[in-house]
Image 1: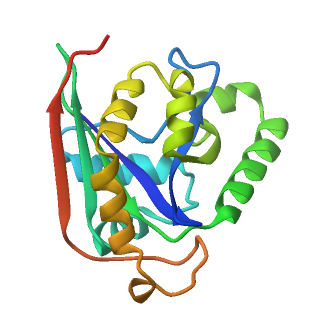
Image 2: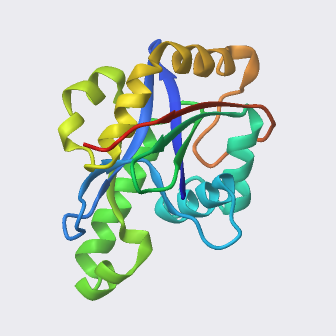
Length: 202
């Protein structure tokens, strides 16, 4: 069982998802969302909050801040279950677009990775994602093979639910629903939508 967060936004009337690129030294490199396996007693949401906060190295704030982001407008959930494996749930949630989030995160990673011992880089969780970027639906189609192998199944489910996801995100990010913000500002609220599907990995 695993859980993740997938920040999603609207920019120039286009939906964008924030993905992170796994280190090349890992056995399953490529792009994916921000998450991992559950620990004993954790729910999907608790796992997503813990893992998401760690992998984004605090750029969306503390675990408490990330929880507020996921609960302010709710989440659209994508469940993927392959044969012989438990469910992986991606929590898609709306946030105000901020291109500086990518700029600051990537520059910070480059700076630290040039100056720290390679063993620290390899063994420390905060270096799991070497860079982040915003992906549109078209980017996801064109770059699908560059995603982590297991996550390509999740990409397919996201693309299959494009209309519903776009409607959900745009309805939550109407001008009346937010004020101008930077990536340091926080959200909080309640409702969630879940899309469930079992699919064998290829």
